[in-house]
Length: 84
Image 1 (cartoon, rainbow, N blue to C red):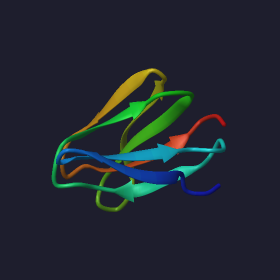
Image 2 (image 1 turned 180 degrees about the vertical axis):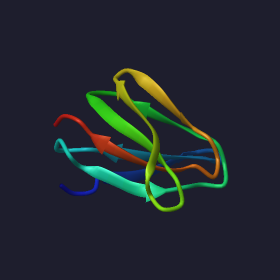
Image 3 (image 1 turned 180 degrees about the horizontal axis):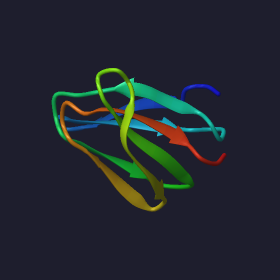
Image 4 (image 1 turned 120 degrees about the horizontal axis):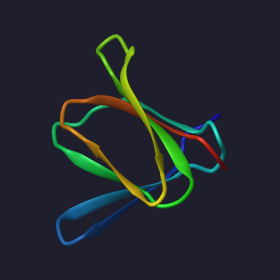
């Protein structure tokens, strides 16, 4: 298990963070933002988990491509690849 490969891109003043989950089990550890955002699942499938402040799962859902994951601001969350 490792972290996804990350590339940053920008168009005008809009930044995009491209994450490539190479192997099943790769994980983007719990983090949160001060803004709403969407995560595009372009291939494969991922497990999205919303966490409380103690990192306990309060909500989880599997997303299969193509799909968009909506993440509300201030939501501690993590994403795990379910396939290579």
